[in-house]
Image (cartoon, rainbow, N blue to C red; front, side, top):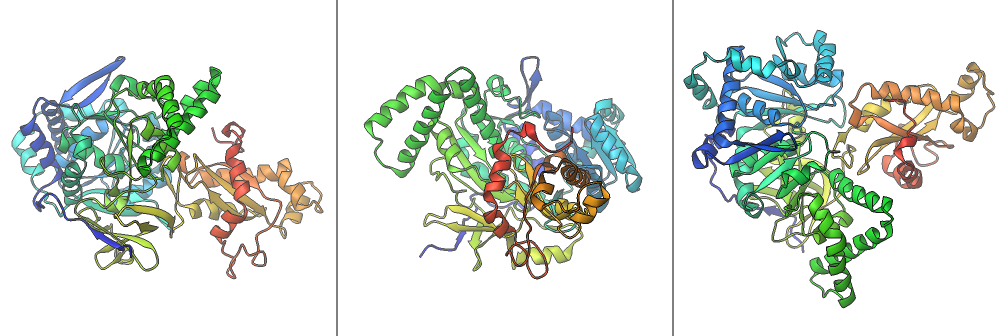
Length: 609
């Protein structure tokens, strides 16, 4: 019988007094001249040493102290993935303050909630559009007394303001926090109601970084180890890797535009951190480039060969002679070109936030890139499990990390405990109590172990949608306002493992005749005709546009389809309480969902810019 619980002992003794700032201090002492970061410089990159980074951190920390930031103060931050993001992060650690990261795509309403609920007293914004959205919410944020705009030179101004603050004051402050103190407050997408603030401690990051560096030493100790971050550093996944890199001495670059994949060619990272969407873009770009050059058929044959070859290697079965010959040929003609496009040095890739899928895992494996797929949530400081460099099973999310326990409850739910599990939900003891069973955190996801302790995710108890880009979307926040429109009967938001959010819509047969008559149309119009009518579609579009205003761009509905049918209790699609049976609908209307994504996105029904 396969065990249902795996507890992996920590590889590094815990240090309850350590905080995240200590990791940078240790790195500077160990390798003061090591290039810890690289920043864009013309067509290339300029290195930033560990000593230089620490000096910049302290200079900015002094400015924050001079501006009145006290230990324990909450400071909001809205910015893209840049060097300055990590600089601000560590400056706040050195001050003893607590960052409240906010996604750069967040709406004014989301910004207002995160900052008000956290009690933030200041906020830093990077771009003018970030400042504009903060200004829109400012009237409902009486606690915010400082708003610094990076696009107006705020960081330089803060540095200048802090020149009279002594080094000893920063040193005193950076040592105040111990392992149990709050390091950051990250708001997660709530399944119902408002998002909850997730309290992550210094120990969550420190202990997980130290143990992960040991467990994944082949990755972080590769000669000249470096990585280029594409995904947002507001997400706990990239945030953790940034801190891990400081601890392990990995050179980190930042690229805020995932479309700028050519940056890989100049940076030449040894490992990548990405959500599946980035891997999809690499694959799709290569395929389309081959197609435009009249070599699409060759590329697709090469891809099939790569996947088949990788499966034989993973299963330990003999590679057929002809397959081996084809693989060697395509390695010269196709795979080598892709390796060069990714910088030529990538050996490992860490994938998380959404399932990668067997196809891409095997494809990249045949390129000589070991994809280490992992699993975790904000509440687990990102990784709870991850495949190991010397033992990877494509299609799984790997075994538990050292210091982490993972078990499968009787109902199939994945539960986690250990060094990475968050402390509590901010000012929400009821939600905190509901999230734990003893010291086990209830993830809401369904999974299973194999005999080696490798975890496979098989479903979700909760209904949060995770797009191919790794964005978490709560369907109810979009569905409820759309359903309020008189012409709409029911709505189901879709997008799990898809590139964008979309929706299935049904019309309200009772209200429809009245609405049609009021709008100069025949009240006797059939559901099928109404579903295709431009005026009806425009009304549904209006409802969707209104709902989209309440969420970020990444969470907004990009396309929709109106079904020529109804969902009722009799049809099996609604409960007696008239709640939608999401799983039944997704099964019965799978073809309609596929059709949405089969048509190019240029045909989107939305009127968003």
